[in-house]
Image (cartoon, rainbow, N blue to C red):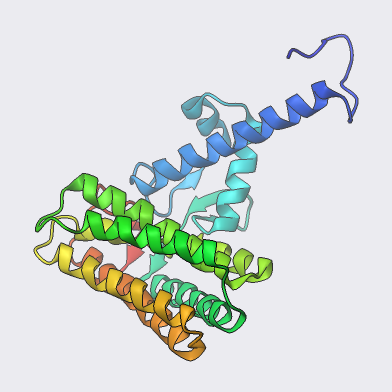
Length: 261
């Protein structure tokens, strides 16, 4: 739908809604593209971000780019400079480890609440079916890139279902916020395992923990469910160490932004 150039759209008009949606869509696209440039190492840590340069590079207007910069600042990939503007952040190994620990603690609370409050049968069946799909992925003795991509997708789905089981919109928002911190997502470092000799073994251990957590929730064992979920986050800590031993942005996007302790 086009906007009549002879009149400004009313705040409640369809034209206004379309314009607002398009502006939001462009900001999301700019945010995704800028994040890709940072994680791929095309904008190294410490690089000052110039709005006008991004206008030319991304082929977008300044408004969505400004919104994208603000959102990536909130996300933690950019830092605000004292004189104005943004620069690409770097992270200490401890900061990343703390982010993973925070996410694991909150997911542990989600598992505890799920066990205490009970979960409806349909949601439990959906989580169980998700784990069945992961089991099928891990059947081969060796895993290729497609297997790892599938694991990342299904692993993220299981973690989302776990959060849903807690039945708390507040906790869901906080876990989403924690998982949005750089490198803190449940699959943030899975890629680093793709070409290691014990790749499948590590994922099998993670899958065993998934099953144990789901069993503890079903049996209403709140303390056990929480402890298992917190222990589960230690696998991500292990992956962090491996990533720093052999930093490869093509395998673990953004790893070049992490400073070893």
